[in-house]
Length: 111
Length: 112
Image (tube, rainbow over all chains, first blue to last red; front, side, top):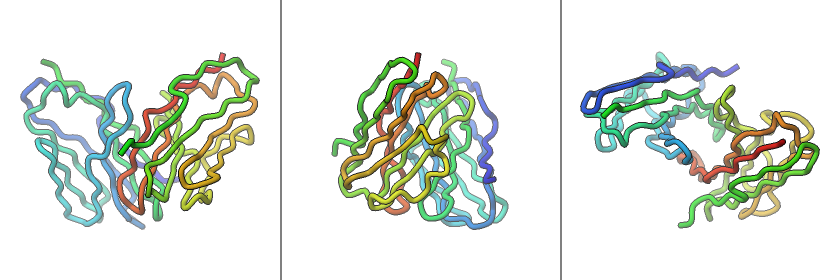
């Protein structure tokens, strides 16, 4: 059974603070790791696709790192804003196209 | 680009009825995915197609569920007969090769 674990499950952060959370995945047969942002009542939107060990991707105040040897990825948000409140999903690409999603980290930014 | 289009957005029906969910993927995407979101299990893959061919249906809960993709621009997910435990949000997504998946707005299904 392929397990993609995210921690913490939920997180409350004060506006302006920086935060990060973790995605753990199998370190063997790695193809890619995806990060998605999922706002309430909307659909998941892709943030990053990471494929190489040591990859670091950035989109505005959000960045992610990847360690395929040990099987983890971190997502960082710098200077959190209320609009960052969402569930952040990571997904491990198993085989050519099948994504296995973690349960997500639900982030709430308190004004 | 209109994105992935799902219909209906909401469906409420009585148990035992047949339910058909529809999806139009983004033009040019060769892979289509059906997911179900529940509180207990999160986002789980039901089935996916590559070039209109079902590749992996191991996530389909049971024989009451079936999915088809008759052409590159249309797919259906059918539940017959429906049961209350099928109530969930069903998402369709499409992608091209290993690019990120683009999700539709989902169908919120309630079986009474």
